[in-house]
Image (cartoon, rainbow, N blue to C red; front, side, top):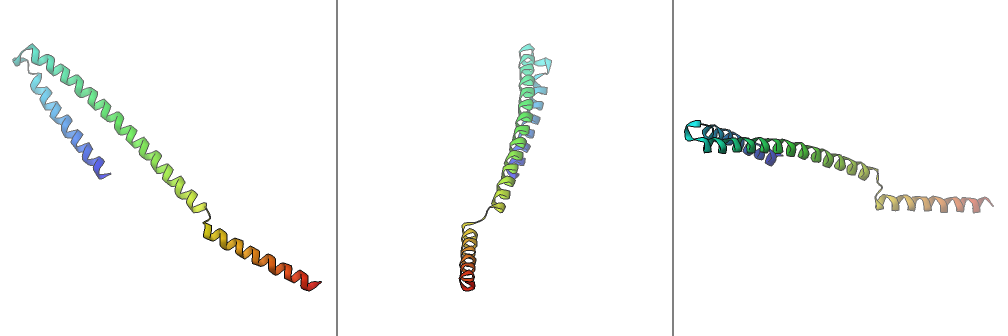
Amino acid sequence: MAADAGRRVEVANLLSLGDDLIGVLLDRKDGESLAQAGDGAWMLRSACRSESGDLELQVKEYQEKINSCKEKLDKAKSETVTDEELNALQNEMEEKLQSEQQLRQDLR
């Protein structure tokens, strides 16, 4: 999560730098070509912001899915009987069956 926060800060800084650059490029004193470049940069910045927002939503959705899967996995693990427990229960059951058979034989 800390790495994601670092990336978000980097994206924010990059977008801020882009805003500053667009401001310089939109200055009409430098001619029409700079204005066109500024308009293109503005469109690019808008597209990048939109893409960044979409990607953040996708990352959030995937993280929620990952967390959900982890919870399901933990639940399944907690509901599963280990081989050791199963063997112990089977041995206990066999002992009780033997004991019951012995009691029936003794009653005859």
